[in-house]
Picture (tube, helix red, strand yellow):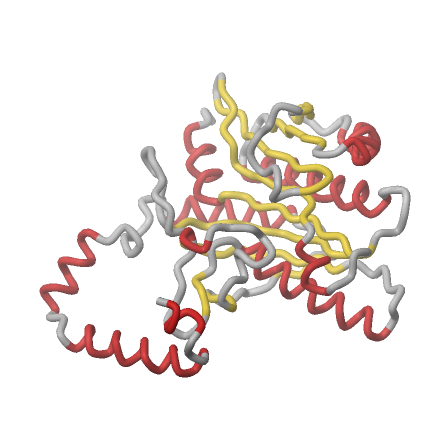
Length: 296
């Protein structure tokens, strides 16, 4: 194990693994491939209707502010892209034999691209405050086992990130959070949600002014309720400052369809502590299925 992990160069390990899997593939018959297809949870088609998925995705795209750039992301990322900065257990991500890993969340790839663009901007102007706004819709795969009906190993996530520089007085955080949450409200309404609930969690006392200043930005949005959720336990250690969850109202209940918050990834990727990054992720499958349950 030590030899494979630390005692070989990356290229030598890749050569070895490619030969191992070539040999294993050569021994598999079509019948064995079919047997694997029937039992492997990673390769089964999604049960959701393509039309419903596409309709929901189109609603999200239509609500995106004009200054966001939509990207077509690659299906793989560099090895450790999900764990080196995002603290995701590597066992939850599918690694490849070529030193990469299958995309598990589009915000990780968007954060890499946004940090690259911010690094180039800072190289040209060390005090650059021009934000980078990116979005993408991507089919992702996660290796952990999910319990419950409809919980797949692969699903569609619509992600968006805003990267920029600390401008003082929490102005960047307030402005970008208001923009992300405004997008959430508009996109859910465009997708057919009659009610939307936004739950905000302040993760440190110094960030409370961010939430207090949001009131005026979100009041008046039709069908939108904004609440504080100080007892939230998930996401602590993953998010910083402020995080949130978005729920779509269906009949007499609310179902979670989105999650987001501030992260330190761009600081780690650029090596600059003044950098700031806000991410949001919307479960397109979940949103499409939730709204399908809503009475017309």
